[in-house]
Image 1 (cartoon, helix red, strand yellow):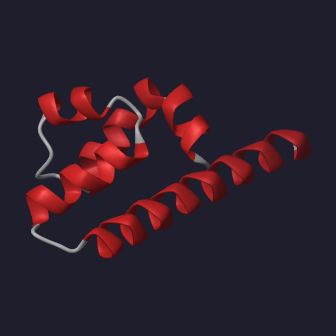
Image 2 (cartoon, rainbow, N blue to C red; image 1 turned 180 degrees about the vertical axis):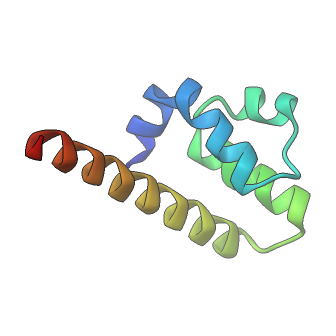
Length: 79
């Protein structure tokens, strides 16, 4: 998933974001509104980590979401 996809799917992704980064509040998630830089910044702020580490976490999360989506698509095709 890239940044444009994240922004487009934000309503569906909010729960996953809260599950992955539990220190983010509902208000934080609303402010982020699917913007990669906002998400990275809030993770930095809430967890006290460097920007590159926060970005790595977001990249890993987006990659995992993409893999899960691709697996679902493959299952549907096989049915």
